[in-house]
Image (cartoon, rainbow, N blue to C red; front, side, top):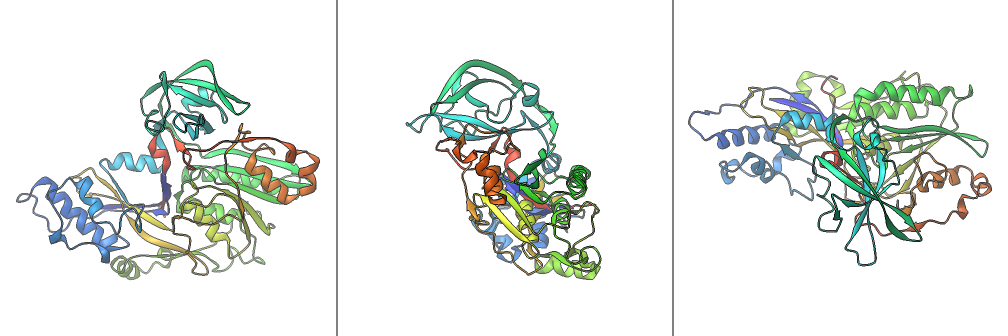
Amino acid sequence: MRITIWMLSIVFLLGACKKTIIGDSGNINTSTVSSDSAANNWIYSTMKDYYLWSDSMPNINTTNLNSKPTDYFYTLLNNYGSTDRFSWIDSSATNLVNQLNGVNTVLGIKYNAFYADLTNTNVVFVIAYVLKGSAAEKAGLKRGDVIIKVDGQTITTSNYTSILQSQSLKLELATFSNDLFTSTGTIVSVTKTELQTNPIIKDTIIEWGGKKVGYLNYVQFLTSFDDSLKSIFTRFKNYKSTGIDELVLDLRYNGGGYVTSSDLLTNLIVKDLNGKIGNAATIMNQKIYNATYTAVLKKENQPSDFVTNFQFQAANLSNLSRVFILTSNNTASASELVINNLKPYMNVILIGEHTYGKNVGSFTITDGQKRWAFGLQPITFKIANSKGESNYGTINGFTPDYSLLDNALPYKQLGDPAETYLSQALNLISGVAYKSFGLDQVVKSKKPQVQQLSIGDNLNMDKKDMFLDPRR
């Protein structure tokens, strides 16, 4: 079987990490059992080997081996929807792996759903961000644009989660003024295309109150953009010779991704501990597996399977004593891992909403003999920081130090000092500068949201997960 370990958020999140293993399905005689039964036997034995809560699985004799494998998988999970909110199965392993690597057929927007009027029936979509190179960007859509109808249909509480699922769409735009959404009559026609997500939505440096403030909005941990992250931090580090004085890391839309990329971001931010980072075995995080898989890993005698140490990065900012992280209910898995990694070593100030609450990760598992195309993504490990802390795995996640809802309209562009979340961070960095710029006088309407989670036009954009890099 093949296992791919990931850490990301599904919200689609998922939330923690990924690895790939190839093996067989055990002693299954596929000539004497039904196809579903054979596949389900393989699923069961695989889960017994790797599922974090394998000791809570039902006895195989009490399960219905003749049920659809995509249904059978969920009957094995530990209190699914509560204790295990994250494991899932895909009928196509290829599709699953593409999703985890940020390859999807999309318009390329993430949006928040707001009630359009006091009836709390009609809904509008306010775009939170647009992916670079996407069909939406090419059509001229941007953060803050309001969608009031789709294909001539009014958006409602009944259809708002499915109305953007067609391949080609006609989006009717609106303006927001005097607390009202009003159609402009403008129709934007957009067709979804396959896109490799560029997770770097915005990076900039702001001179604020005598300080140089770096800002980064990052929406998914993808190893293919690790070099881009390093380049951004190199610019932060070398800005005007002495580098930035403060960092605002915007993870409010980041549901997770590769653990290795999460570790990289941690290495780039962490304050150098008197020259120890990269020069000594300073623990960043540590993983816990089930008893069966723990025994296998111990035989292989690879300490890195359990403990990850900090590593030197030339672009490490080194001098920061604190970091401001902007969060929401979408902040999950590998994003939460960065927060937890840094907490023992520097002051981590959270601004926004509580995070998703995913302190566990998963392996992508496929059939090495290629009899079935299923891709399994069961939770396979729990992760803790250097102090052994991992107490954010509830629906309340991490609690922000400064609570803030992303419901102030109209939206400012990401990286704009007047944008709601960023302006709060800048106020904390330099209140005098904040007032001198008059941002405290900006009047914004706060509209009720249908849900606090931001939504992608393709549901795969909403998963929250955390997984390990199979190339490690």
